[in-house]
Image (cartoon, rainbow, N blue to C red; front, top):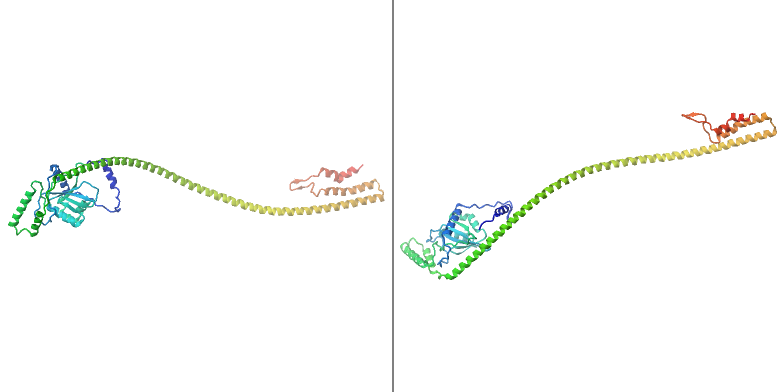
Length: 427
């Protein structure tokens, strides 16, 4: 079965991630194919090309496998199937051994290390686990057999390769000559045992007798043919299903690769947008910091100005209070001065009335002449002028005080001037 084109990319994607159940940071050793494995692949390919894909005749095999210390093993290559147990049905692996003796030694080690594994027949092993073959190759107990056996996976597209039938000792098995060969081998073994009885062990003779006595009845050829036909059909259907799954997986991987490419493009654009957004956020942050600093400074200046204004207002309030007190005291002083001036005006008025009364009394007693009347009028004129000058209030007239020139009022000059009054009284 051909590998899909996109499978290589998918394998690289899988190698980048640790599978589930595996610890991170733990190095997994990579299995390196040995020279014997490559040679075994070549030998298996050659054997598949030369082996006829026909149903073999009914075999005659022993039921129980012999031990590795028993003689009589063939030096030819020994082939067997290895099926995984407890796993979804899959094409079996093909085991190739240098000889049947190596297979027997290998099986004794497998049975000792992995007791759950079984040997269902001379050429069929049931191994427990998914990677039992890899575990066996990595086991140091099998180190002395590392160059004497290998395993290959069967090609699902062309079906499982049909192996030549062999017994436990590696001898080829055929339907027609099985009994004759067994009899000949038994006779030869008996002759050899008789001639070389001192060299053969008692245990080997007992094993041969047991195998000869427990020989099963001939198999039914039609039943075996039907079974093999069904097996071939099942393998073919499995191969077609595997091929369909491979095609579906290839298309799925291609679509997944396209989705990954689009996702990578979108992620790149999102990364660029995020970088631009981050730069804008940084600029906004710097502007916000500068604005906060300026706002803080303006707030401090406004606070300082308000403090100064409050201080000035407090000072002005204190000054205004003092000024109010001063104005109140000045008003009191002015009122007292006004009252004093009013008393003074009353006194002057009373004095002038008394003088006028005296003048009237003198005028009645003496009837003065025009000169006397002129003299009395001239003498009373200063008092009346004084009263007229004081009645509006005392002022500094006709004097320059601090650059201001006060002049006489025309009304006062006309009424209270002694010279003008005297001039008006002259004939």
